[in-house]
Amino acid sequence: MSFHMNHAMRAQKSTIKNAKQTLQRLLMYLKPYVLLIVLGVFFSITATILTVIGPSILAQATDLLYDGYLQRLSSPAFELDQSAVFSVLRLVLMIYGSAAILSYLSSIVINRVTQKMTLTLRTQISSKINQLHLRTIDEKPIGDVLSRITNDVDTINNSLQQALIASIVAFLSIIGILIMMIRLSWILTIVALISLPVSLFTVSKVVAYGQKYFSLRAKTLGDLNGHIEEMFSNHLIVTAYHGQDFATKKFRELNDQLQSQTQKSEVISSLMLPVGGFIGNLGYIAVVLIGAMLMISSQLSLGAIQAFIMYIRNFNQPLNQMANITTIIQSTVAAS
Image (cartoon, rainbow, N blue to C red; front, side, top):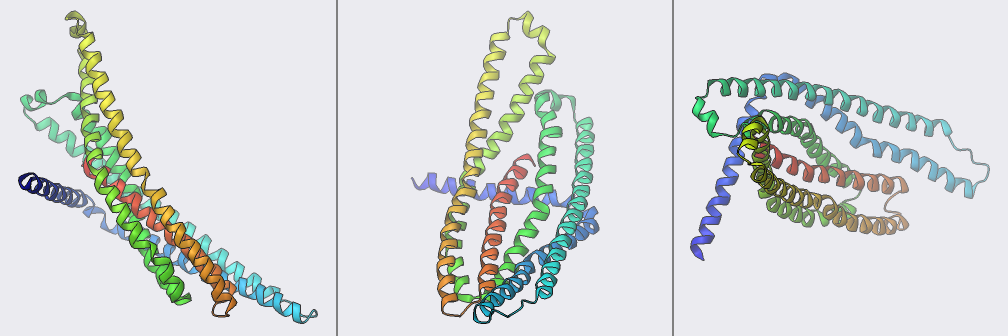
């Protein structure tokens, strides 16, 4: 029992170490594009800051309308200063519009970086294959080699394109929103954060369990591509030696394995959003109830509660993004 446990722990440590080394090697390919990455990150950071301060500005318009409504009840002749309300709304529109434009520019820059890196990867892989000994090529299925150049590189490209900026945006959003929430109400902030460690613990367990299926899926996909390429490129030989039944049986076995591994990996990764969302919604309900009591006791304004609720909704979004990024990183490591 002790031997098996020690062996499993060593294997897990080795896997983590290999994954870390793989990501470090992959990031080396991004070094030539540091300036472009910095530009994209700058656009993304600015857009995130604007998005974070948006709800607090919008809260001012809500307070103006609500205060005007209360004064109208006590004094029917009271006239609401509509110009002040529209000024706040125009400012909010400018803030969110600028954030959208900057996010778009950031996406364009990062897309350029990932496409350039993909070009470098494919060029180096092709050059490496041309330098290999013929025996090395013969020992590997051609489909597996093709899968490295096509499927694996595409996976790395798509994953980096999604995760590179999304991870920065999610991290900054969490920090910025947390600061704004504390400014509005530390009581509601504590209530909202109670569900956070539970959600993170649950998601981390799901991620750890799903890693092996992502690795198996990448390996089986390469085996399947290799089998298909060999059977079709040597179709005459297979037919001459009546190997159709064997080829069909082998294809079905690999296809069934790929289907099973893909289904398991997707099912496990799909658990992250609903599990995290369910736990987050419980905290959301508690915030609404306690916020209503604080408003009744005049400790918070209606606009502050509205802004806090918007921050809660926006706070869950980057948390879900972080959960998705962990899934993307798993696919990236497997492909790398």
